[in-house]
Length: 189
Length: 189
DNA sequence: TGGTGTGAAGTGGTTCACAGCA
DNA sequence: TGCTGTGAACCACTTCACACCA
Image (cartoon, rainbow over all chains, first blue to last red; front, side, top):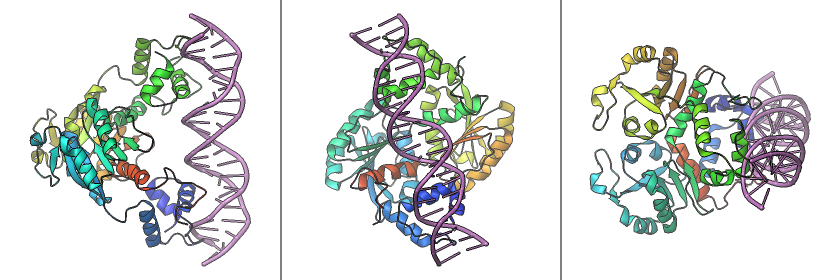
């Protein structure tokens, strides 16, 4: 498999892709390309996907429940082992195999199960407090869907996905006449 | 309001924020800061948020329905005016005020209502074909949740959110001993 | 011949540092 | 004095271009 074929599939430049792959070592063959299976193994190892990673989800509202039903995480080597909510009884559990517990039991669960990753889909006004408790319990990585900047110690990784912002980014380029803002020209003359 | 206060709230560097704001013109006062209301107005105008932007959603599965229930889009000036699905009758409509139509009627709707933005939450294997039809009908911006690279003409803007990938990004930094890969040192020695 | 690996150049975004002004 | 606006330096990432080798 050549870098140009891979690059096309990934939607990037071939040089880019070759450069990136060298960080895994160098096992392409000049004139031939990359051995597919070795590539898969090497990437999998670097990404730490040898075994399932346990994850918890906090906030089983609309978005949270959808995420619980979402199969994509399992496919990529994650296992959502439990969900937590302030009102677990209110959660519509149809089609959900993951147990939903009260958020008061979260700390205990995280500690006992040595959970390192959490998905946060709580209302924005509770995002920081829940984050604090998670970090305090030992969680080191957060995927947040709240439109706010979470304050965490530097040893904790946060990835924030703001859905409205993602749509906003598309919208900006659609409504504007020109595809990009010209930095030499103020947007408002 | 000073740039440093805004920067702190946004989680960025003050210089960064000042530099960004100059693209809107220059209306900060040296020694004083920025006038809040003018700032809001200027940003709103640039982002084209004076009036509601109509959006359609395609693919009313788990994620799609959650997105329909999600209030964040409305808050940011978007209105999801209709949803489309291959089996609209199967969609659980509880708590959804947006009408769900059959995907066959999508093209007509897009053209008649001059829809320019679409949210795509269809299964990955149908993402490209639905994209083609949307683009063909006049949609110019797509927010996709399918883990695939969509092929579109250059005048169409695509923003892809791959939820599993977002979690993967967190996971990488959590499981690795060091916070970052040292580019001089191959990950696999 | 074809395609990798990589110096070197290019690009664009970030940060510094400070002149200038309320 | 305090804080903006911005030239210049900095930095990280991207792309080019080509030596090198199966």
